[in-house]
Length: 407
Image (cartoon, rainbow, N blue to C red):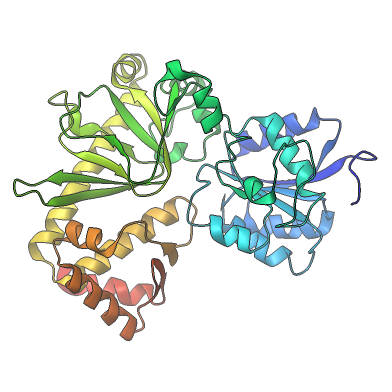
């Protein structure tokens, strides 16, 4: 397409959430220069529909039933290279970003990007090839800026918007945060809420906070006031031992809750440090308490979250108390695999955000022991390792490594 002025841009929508899909169809339907020509909720029906409708551009979620957005791109691009792809996700800095861009996706957007700017990105995707300069009122000087996951010029939570509102506090953005349209809601506090209860849950979050890689969300001794739901990125929690050594106590990813260590004493007992550029939803604890009194199901869900934390701690005790090095590492990789799968990512292929030294600290192993265990798994063709990129070649074999100890 050489110009966008003469006709509407045809958009195919791929989104697994029926609520989000219906809302997006309605928003696009109000645009004179955009038109939805079809939609799908699974990877298979998406590929079939895109090849049948041949749209100008595809607005694509990463998390889909029966596959991922990356699977869709890889299947469609060789057969229809003229179709553009715009990915929007709750984890713009997630493990698939690099692979998506390498596969030919024009840009990876944050799902809370203002719709007017999402519209501009959809149009821009049809007038430039991946990696080519963008000549369009999105006001981006080069394509790399468009491909930047946080899209500072497009994203309401970007640096420019936050600096314009210094009263919000460092890193805080007072912007609408809708739990109902978040793909992580089934992993977070609003899980299972419907009707009026779901509407009340929208009152939980009123700010989001960005945390740069290496920065702390909170430190041990800080006054407790809020819980934090990881919206994108990865964190580690740590304790500093009396001799000054750092002990890693956990790794948290999108959809998981942090800060519960401060509830009992009203001060945090550990540090929470971002392993990559991340963003959290800030949930004031006083607001959560008030809502749980009015919404019993929300209280039940919060208790489930706390129960999962207790189960996790028991699992760590089992790791440290009875397993050999290879068994600990196998259990760790399987746990990551299960958590990525629950978020719609690949069960067998992911990037480690933490260093091997941090893995060792968490598992109670020396760095050299972790490295030897990784090497042994590679020699046995259980996994493939390329720096921090992990591919599990034999899931059952890794499971057997753990099962030998548990049996």
